[in-house]
Amino acid sequence: MSEYEQEFTIYEAAALSDPTELQRFLSATPAPTQDDLDASFENACCENQVANAKLLLEHGAKFTPSILDNSWVQSDPVPIFELLLQHGWDVNNGSIYVPKTPLAMARVAQNKTPDGIIWLLNHGGDPNLRDTRRGWDEMPEMEDVYENGVVIGKRPRSRERIERSREMAKISPLECAVKVGNMDIVKLLVDHGAEIDLGALYQPVTVKGTYWALDTLKYFFEKGADVNASDREGRYKSLLIANVDRRLRCKPDMEVLVGIAKLLIEKGIDVNVLEKFGRTALRCAMDNFGDDSELYEVIKAAGGIVLPESYD
Image 1 (tube, rainbow, N blue to C red):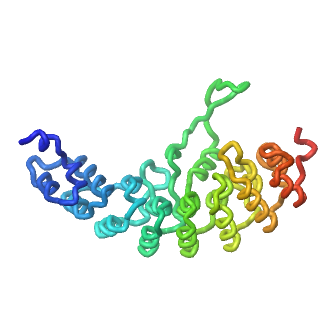
Image 2 (image 1 turned 180 degrees about the horizontal axis):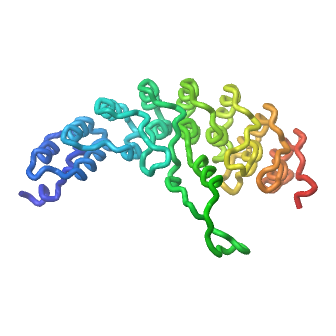
Image 3 (image 1 turned 135 degrees about the vertical axis):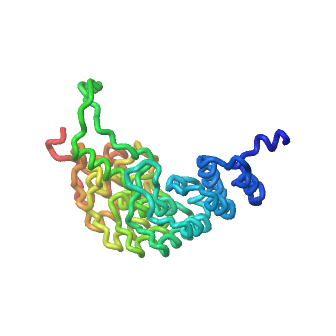
């Protein structure tokens, strides 16, 4: 056996377009381990090698929802989806709080083309079933205790705080689509019953100001979204404050910020709601962009006040 053949593995064979090499490994003695089969199946999916993926399933490879977290879901997922469906896959497979069990709908909603979403919706995909954000798989039971800005110990987190964190950890397919600015998929999801949740509604005003943010908000308001809905984290309290208080999180385009502010005012937003730290939208605009900015003038002209007298 050559040095090349000694180093070549079933995992690598699964990625080849010709299944001959893979078949050789599957027919070998001793047979591949379950771990080898599962890893090779995942690699075949990643490379969109449907014939190889089918072979591996027929030889005992197991499908786990974790493979939906791989890049193939964002390329051309339909052929693999068809194969998985033939082998008993539930398209809504995934557990909200269990690590590494992502939902296909949320992943495919970030694609550039709508083919995957159309397929999932046509095969029973639930547009309102939410996934877990990356890095939010575990909900800690303890939290730090501070004194003068220094951690001095830990204490149990309240059940209310844990439940609130779990709610914040959820992400809908619609929010995923808004996040990447794909209006075709946004409209597909809404047309198929996706609710305009707070995560999706606030996404255009909490990321870098881009051309699609204004169009997305206009569309949501046309579909009945509440312009005065408070964000679920309780930090901003209003879309207007979230729109003007993102200088430190990104470098927003002033034209986009002003356009969004004008739209929100036109739709009847309360310009004097207070955010978490007691500031109004006008105060946020002054702090972040100055009282000579166009954004400040637009909010002031709509009746915005700088701050309540009790602020300082």
